[in-house]
Length: 282
Image (cartoon, rainbow, N blue to C red):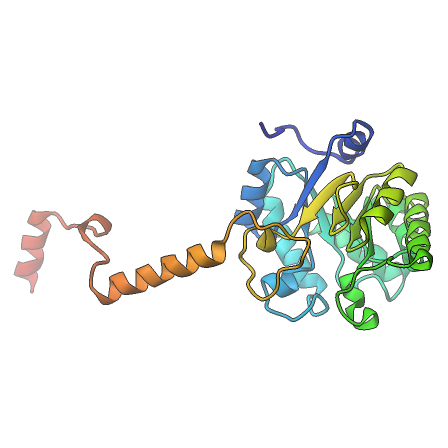
């Protein structure tokens, strides 16, 4: 049975201490947020992945702050109990501390979010500390960071060598010390994610990081088989909405073309006496 109490950051942290897995999903609008929230997910992330899954861009780089706020507002109206996190898009925090604070604040003040997520390790510590000092909760994100896709040369697993794995571990420890309340680990080897999860006291949320993380996150459209262009290896599809929706629309088109829709059941009738009046008027 889904938990009905309002999810808070202390609650999420306590789940790690109690060794209770944390659930997290993306949502981008009112209906998806409502469905995810009612199903009992702990954390809803308004992910910059909406650039791809909703807007049709080839990567996450194109989405703007205004667009993220627009979608955050919709999600905030649809969710009642989940912890709401806004994903800070590309160039919303990289330009400097002042810009980072301003944009993080917009997620809470305008978007109705309860925290923000930033990609990057030790290179973004100054911004994270500044945002946290403004009483804005921050979730970190290391490993595969999609906003760095051009630098990384594609969507590749990170931390596969001893040196790069040690760098990820150091990043995680630094993010914790900077004040992050949780860290997303994306596309890193299971063994590396296990080390990080055991060495830091804040929750780790894995996406393609194996079973030893304190929680898991997936993209809403991936989980439901709704985004057809690419399905990462780490995704488990729990439904195939692509097929269901395509078949439903095809049936609709056939019904319209064959004049099987609408029927009397989907139509409205005029009172007979009013119809008689109308005929006289004509």
